[in-house]
Length: 439
Image (cartoon, rainbow, N blue to C red; front, top):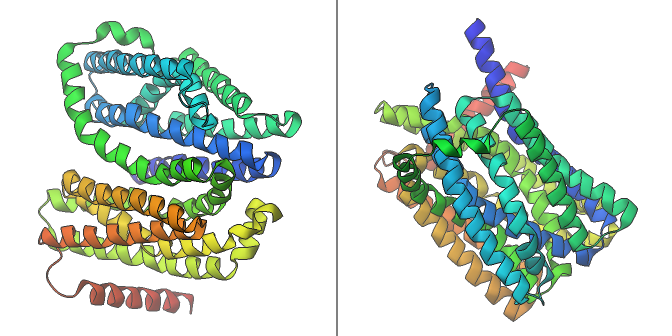
């Protein structure tokens, strides 16, 4: 019983560390929409999109590699790995910062304020974030979930600090970026004082560990960077071709759409280890059954939610963005079509990873990114209408789901029988079972 309770606590903290920051982030964005000027908001969204992209490229691969390597009880080995991560991450951060400072001084992006400010401010922010990235990776590896939850909540609170600043002082893009930098530096100082990470461990670095980290990073960075590019491409392209005000308009339904990803991430958190376990045990029937269960549950959850959101879209937009963004209702409704393909994309993606075929998953993501980028440019050039930009995202998601399904079928694990008939049969029996329990 004690073991069961401990597992429940662990799962609760793991779920909370994903859900709470996401919800708080959405709420802070709702507040910022109401207190910031659309032009400034659009510029800041371009800035934050660039930060997210660079953090994913610079830190995402390093964190994943660290989790794989630090998951050991040998303190001496842990120090060596963490020291090597600081050495490798430090070189990457300083190199990127140097290039960005030169770009900022040159003023090459002077006509794109979001990118120009990013070049100057991220040169500092990227270095400040390094200890936080390593502290987070260490917490995941050691299952220090309380600290992980506290760290992510603290980072999300930065959005509310900017909201308060904008409420009292108005603010420009530069001031928002400065507030974000100072708040992040404060979090880093607290983490260092708590002893959750120590940059001085760089003295324990070992070249064999550096090489091991580099070997792992090259397999994880490409997929993570492409996934992030897939999410931020719309922001960059709209900002470049239509301006920051259009970015702000598009961001409202896009952020609302991200709310639909929260329960899907929760399902993925529990589905992935189960699928991986079935694969590692060579339990093909068990893998197929688990896949069908989670695929069915995802759509049982999503279809009613998407239908309700489509019907009540005007009221949802009004609550979320206010009257000045009421015109984005049609974009939000287009995104409901996108939502139809999200469960398939996510469940298929984690299934390919569970089968230890991340390269196949990367192919799917690269195809989706190519469709999204080319489609966005064509849609803006020929229509200058954000509804068509949103529809490109629908095409991109549909292509990813179909390609992913074909790749997964090609593994041979889902070829027996009609999968869609089985999904319908499982869903039907699941609904009847739940209705009988209510009765």
